Structures are given as C-alpha cells and as structure tokens.
Figure: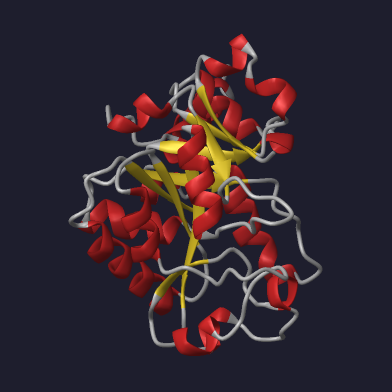
Amino acid sequence: MRYILPYALFVIIYLYLIKPGMRKLPVRSFLGLKFAHRGLHGDVIPENSLASFERAIDEGVGIEMDLQLTYDNEAVVFHDDDLVRSCGVHKRIRNITLTELRGHTIFNTNHSVPLFSEVLSLVDGRVPLLIELKSYGIKKGFRLCREVVDKLKNYKGSYCIESFNPLYLLWFRINHPHIARGLLLCRFPYKNSKRYIPAIFLLRSMLLNALSRPDFIAYDYSHRPLLALKLCRFIFRVPLFAWTVPQSLIESTKLSKYHSFIYEE
C-alpha cells in the first residue's frame, strides 16, 4: 500500500505534463478532412510549388506546407534544409538570399520556390491550410514565427500552425494564443551522441506539452503506437492529424471519426 501513493502521484504528474491544450478551437472542424502533403504533386508538378497547391485547390482538399526563412528573412515554402534533393546544389536555405534561391528551379521543372505570401494570395481562403514551421536555431525560429504572423494577419481563410519544436508553439501560446497550434510527433531516433538523448526523450514522450499545450497532435502514422500519443488521444481526446496516411486507409470509418489525413498521391 505504501507504494500506491507515489505511483499515483507519478501518473498524475505525467498526465499533467503531456496534457494538450483542450481548447475548443476551429481546428476541430478539420477532423475528417484530407490534406495534400506538400500539395498534390507528381512527376511534372513538384512538391510545395504553386502548381501543386493549385491542383489541391482544384481537388477540394486542404494543403499541408513547410515554411522556413532565407538568409534575408523571407518566408518561403520549402521542406528540406538544403537544396541538394530539389536542385542538386549544396546550399542551405538559411544561408542564401531570396534572389539566390530564385535563381534555381526545383526537381528539374520550370517551377521555383514560392514565397509564403504568394501561396496565401493563391489559396485565398479556398481550402484550409496546415502550416509547418521548420525547426532550427531559436533566434531564427522566433523570427520565422513573427514573419508568419505578419503574413497571416490579413488572411481570411482557415489555418493552423504546427512544428516539431515546442518552443515555437510556446511562442504562439504566449504571443498569439488565438492561433491554433499543433505538435509534430514521430519516433525520433536516438543518436550516437549521449547529449541528444534527453532532448529526444522529452520530444518522444511529449513532456514539453506542459510548455506549449498544443491544440492538436500531427504524428507520423507509422509511429502511432507511441504511449504518449495514445494517452493524449484516449484520455484527453485531442484532435489528431496523421501523416502520411496510405490512400487505402483514408476512407476508414474508424479512423475518420477523430483524424485528419495528410496524404500523397
């Protein structure tokens, strides 16, 4: 009996730490919707391009996109940290200016990396947006947060922001709590260096939810057995965004009751 109280206290503290925001925000209206992962792209339409977003709009599905800053602090829609995969160039987005970036086309097409403002003008509220803030240094990351808010201040459509970095979500919680925010989650691999282990443990366990109190969880569908994710779903009923879900499961009745789906063709 003497161990029951410590165990119970441990469980209560753990649940308090992983508890999401529990706010009744419009994000719940996104449940059951489909979101095109980096737009609807293929061989001739590259990911995160204006063409891929136009195609998603034509299909009537939401858009998931990735944002980061150039060296001159322009918010652009691009996934990778560098241009190797998309352009065959060993340059990082954060180290080049927008003008330099515009000098490259992506994935052997005539398309270039779009500005976030260009995407907002194109979408114009026609479909919901799921906006990922790419994670890098804190100073640059908070600058990205400010740039995103500035671009969204006159935008009339529905959107949410999300990030792997809970400190960015904390920034939104403090400065712009009206914006729905979501935590990106996967089974982060433990790296060889011991210095990464505590950070990876905190992220995988979602213990930093105590700081950010996310309004939803966007998780890698192949990593759904994570304990913290299951607890957030079944105890706190947090909205879930699953990425990237196989097409064969998108129409699953059981899944669609409490998920949004982020998929690729």
